[in-house]
Length: 295
Image (cartoon, rainbow, N blue to C red; front, side, top):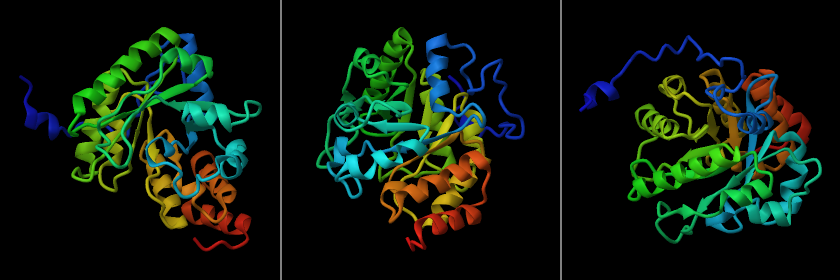
C-alpha cells in the first residue's frame, strides 16, 4: 500500500512549470476527441485559456434564492458577458434564450433540498438529454469526505462514461461540508481524485495558503468557485489571486447576481480574468459602471 503520509506531505509541485498542453490550449485535453475539445473551446476563451462562468443553478436545492427570484430579469441581461452559463435544464429550457447564448454547463446531479443531507445526490439527468440541449459540459457534485462520498463519486464516474460516448465533458464540483476545512490539503485531495477518475474539469474553492499547489497537482483545469457574497474588492482580489495561482478562470454566482449592479460586476470580473486588471482597477471599473454602488 502506498505511503499515506508521504502522499499527503508531498512537496514537488513545481508550481513554476506549467503542464504542457500538447497542441490544444485546454489543460489535460490534448488526448480528447474532437467533440470534447470543441465543447471545451466554447467554455474557455482561446485568447486567454480561461473562463468566466456564471453560476445560477442554486435553485436545484435552495429554491428561489436571493437574486434568482426572476432569472429572466436578473440573469438573462448578464449572458453577453459570460463565457459559460452553469444552470439546470429546467431553467435553460424555460428562460434562457437560445440565440446569443454561449456555452452551457448543465447541472446533472441533485435530489436532496437544503432540508436534507445534501450529500445524498443522485444523477439527475441522462447524458442524451445533455446532448439534446447542446450542453458544452455537465456538472456533478462530489462529496469527498462526506457521508455519501462513494455514491457521489459513482455518480461522477457514470457521467464520465456517458460523456465519453457523447463527447460531452464533465465538471466535477467539490462540495465542502461544514465539518470539512477548505485548506490546500483537502482541496488538493478532492480535486486530484475528481481528475484521476475522469472529469475533464474541476470546480473548487480558493484557499489563501497553497492554492498554487492545488492547481499544479490537478492535471485538468481548476475553476475557482465564487462562494458566498463578499465585498466587491474582496471578491475581485480572490479572483485575481486564484488566476495568478493557476486557476483556469472563475465560476461566480452570488458575487455577481446579488450585487446592486450585476452587469457592472460581471464586466469587472472579466477584466480580472481576461484582461489582467488588478483588483483595485477592477473595483474602480465596477464603481464607475454601477454609478457608485457601495456593496
